[in-house]
View 1: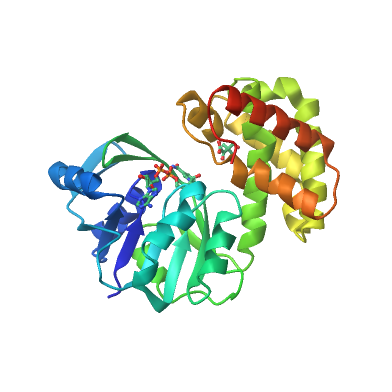
View 2: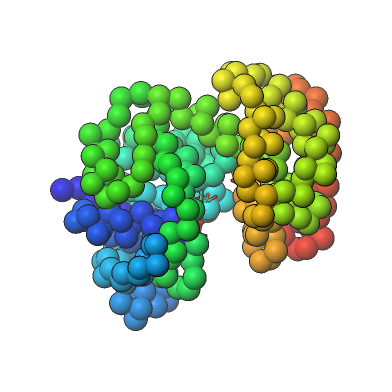
Length: 304
Ligand code: NAD
Ligand code: KPL
């Protein structure tokens, strides 16, 4: 059986690793440095809490510097860390290895696919929710779906059954870029405004005109990027998501509130850079990007 190497034992990486290991699949965690490895060994494995039940799994862990070849790599870092993380294990990648890229937004996946063309890069768009309540201690907080797809090749890999056996909800998508663009557009219409107004998602209904102006421009961008399906009904879905998640703080708001780096460059940054490349003037998006950059810099957070 092929080993799943999981690079990034944070929220989603731990969630995937724990479910795969629980189902008997061979899994190895790749940790950042010797201190993290020692802390992991002291903890005695990964703890996953789900539906009020917790289980600790002694999944083997190693450093990037280990020498065994990697045939299947799940990259579960933040978008801004993904390329450097893959580079740290590049010497170990088997010639036709699969690299699953679990990042939100767009841009980081393409960077990895360009740099390691010998690998099959599978992009994953996830609506599952997980958070860390401590070191190597993860809570599965929201059931969802994982769409997997390869923009270069619509043939599904033969290991999807392993995900089913592990209880990982998934669907193969022949148009994964449309899924990722749609999610990016939703995030661009909601997340930056929640930071600028320092509010929960639901409070954006008081700024409906601004949300709708962003949706109009995002739909123009999606069509210009060759993603007309991702543009269809965007504003309606954004309003539905705002209502359905009214009591929540967006992920970007949570990052900023914790003083953590955001994935802005792979969300609004990617949207604005794509617009510029296509020669599109999208003033509402550009204004939000400018205000968000100012706010992040004011808080000492990076804008890239
Ligand atoms: P996280 O911050 O919890 O975990 C990332 C982990 O990667 C951290 O433990 C970090 O130390 C590790 N890492 C970074 N660089 C590394 C390296 N070079 N070597 C080894 N480890 C390295 O992040 P997350 O919440 O799991 O998010 C991962 C991606 O999934 C993000 O793009 C996020 O937007 C997306 N996502 C997350 C959720 C969620 O509920 N957490 C849901 C949907 C999508
Ligand atoms: O994905 C989200 C996030 O907070 O990142 C939603 C809930 C859709 C808001 O954009």
